[in-house]
Length: 281
Image 1 (cartoon, rainbow, N blue to C red):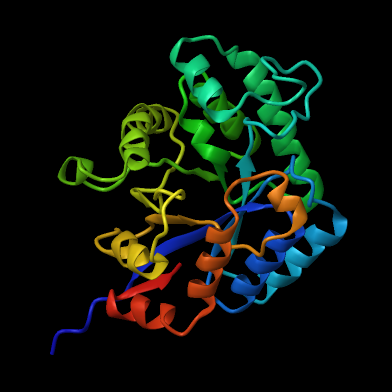
Image 2 (image 1 turned 180 degrees about the horizontal axis):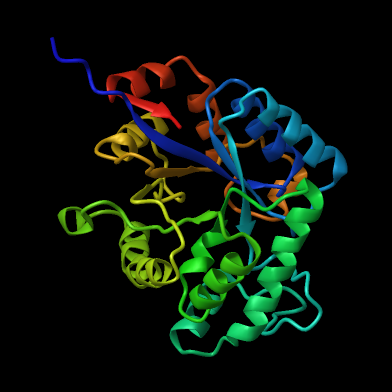
């Protein structure tokens, strides 16, 4: 009798650890419950400190297969850690649209980006005593022209065993009518994958998790779409959290975070994984 194939192992990664205490607490709860197996830490965030890092390490100790990555941040309303970083807008990084435009117009200095990323990687090492397991980017800035080469060079130098996150879907041509954000990520990720391959840096084979945060969405239905067909070691990005004043002051993504947390912590999520023959790696 033929043995059943083992379940596909995927990464379910909660972004933005460090953006606020409420987001941190929600992510830790999901890790402790076995509902996440990765989170990426925003070292420039206001909720990164010894207590928050120790609490995350304690949560991960209960789930040893959980990876901790660096959530490289290069967009407003956050500020650089390096002294000479440019361009800035009122002392902060450029907003997402301006940074993307500057990258497309080749108006970003890769050396300054590389310097900032080295400082963020060093900050992660200072907090955790080691390099990150993987490196991704807030608002996918790691994929932008003018950023991606500096990003890959910094990872290669400071975290050579880490994998990096690309944002392209599997068989994107078959999904050409997907959300505009997903289409943009498909396009930006093509060159990123080529460059990562040349640098011999590992990356995820496929990505899911992008949706229109401005619309009311059934997150359970979205998760079914994200999981469907995702290959081994594919990554699903998520943003669970509890809303607090710190988050409201920094990010428009608020109520959706609580909806994501409710589904991931609820009774419907494990059967969804089982029905798709998927496990968290």
